[in-house]
Image: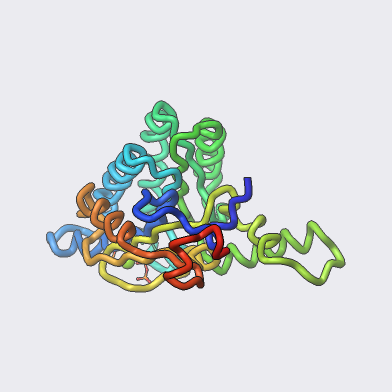
Length: 252
Ligand code: IPE
Ligand code: IPE
Ligand code: MG
């Protein structure tokens, strides 16, 4: 099955998005507002990951992609970075068994070589263990950058076909780190900023964007349903006219 073509096919109106991608932002501000240290916001943020994974599984979403740590987040103070790594490890340890029991497949994408070897091993084990699960695929983007993803895809493509000077978009897309998933239907960014921050640059070409001021630790089921509701109101045209969508078969 070809997975790179969500910019071609118009999904039926009012459908549940197959793939939701989220920038989970606002943990620090959530904590600061409560006179708590920033890391308290990250801890609460991990709880919200659990709840959004569950909610997506219940709603029949097939792919949920979460931006957990960007390639630029190394610029943060060292102690905040190390707390984030520790939270990532404990969450992996605690949650993978439950995810597996619920038939959830876990993938972690990004430049993992910069993580310590214990964490890399835990990631590989979790992916291996859940590899055949089919209900929902949860992808954690860790040390991920959209530009990094495109560059590593180009490197793989060129290495796979030495001497070839011309490539198609589909050929490149096959080497992106999320080639196993269709492109996101719905992008959500919490925390009030309206930017991509080097998340999935290639894959968001025709994704519906949803920005909310809600901080990630407050992003509950009702907030998720509001985002999905907004998505379901939209008309995705992929370059066509509104009239063409009435008879999509003829139009394509
Ligand atoms: C998102 O929350 C979590 C990560 C980037 C790891 P922030 O930590 O960016 O929270 P704010 O944006 O400072 O409030
Ligand atoms: C984006 O949030 C990355 C993650 C949520 C992991 P940031 O808080 O790092 O983004 P900027 O710095 O505000 O663009
Ligand atoms: Mg932020």
